Image (cartoon, rainbow, N blue to C red; front, side):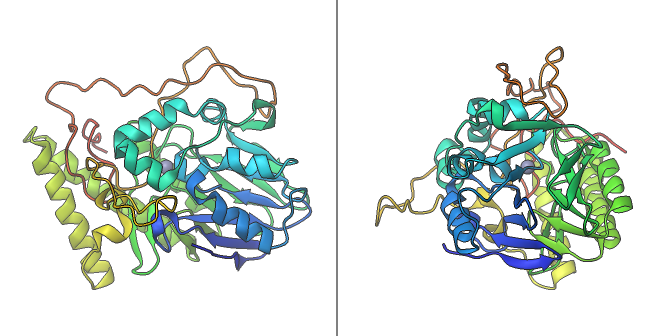
Length: 374
Ligand SMILES: [Zn+2]
């Protein structure tokens, strides 16, 4: 699937990477200037699309200066290693908790495979290449990433993931939100929470959205595209998270029947979609876990293999936080050898959603304890 960058702001261009064969699902942004920069990399499977678009845009192997990722889930940073192999002068910037998983993506891959099934994960996202630690800059809240003539201010925005950051562009005031506000489906103007296991924290997610709302003149979402009215977008995204959280809280007070809770969220998602868009929800349009893997380009005519149904609707896999006692230096380039664990949290008896649960598209619900009440 070929695509090109298109202007979406002052010195900002968007590439629809066509992830999983779908349009308006995954965005990569190019910041123009003295030091051309990509915000997000797309998954490794989409690297040919990104490389092709950069080439046609005139960004040669010596030109790209930076990759900046909001978090290390495969759809946001999985292509980093492949892109760095092509752009030899570029570095990658990531929150300190995410850095170990760029260096050694094995545990992240393993975690993602548990969510989607290995076949589906590989078909949709590909395999990330490890990133040489000397090419990694780690950041924390309030750091400023200089890009030559413009900069990105780091806003630590946990909730979707413990290492998630949003990035405020000093030149325009827009904020690259990653998945901090969830997703916005532009073709129907519907907001959807993105709350994947195992790190989701609803209260933190709402606080993060508040931070973005106070800072942003506009939103640049990864799934998908610009939202001009930042305040309205943040308010609608937060309201949806609250509504889904309330549903889980209310039902989990009465039942441990995970299927019942999941079914209620499916119905809620469908009703919200119909209310907002005026048309029925299309689960296979957005929900990666609702579709079989695509045909492999390497195997013309191959039939999709059957895989177990995944549970997370958004294309994410989440490692556990980096262990305490292994801090990363701010903005450092020093080699690091220890990676954060990616071990699923033990399921509390009678309180957690279980494997095999069908989750509403985009919820990521399926293997986690019910969301805490607000
Ligand atoms: Zn994610």
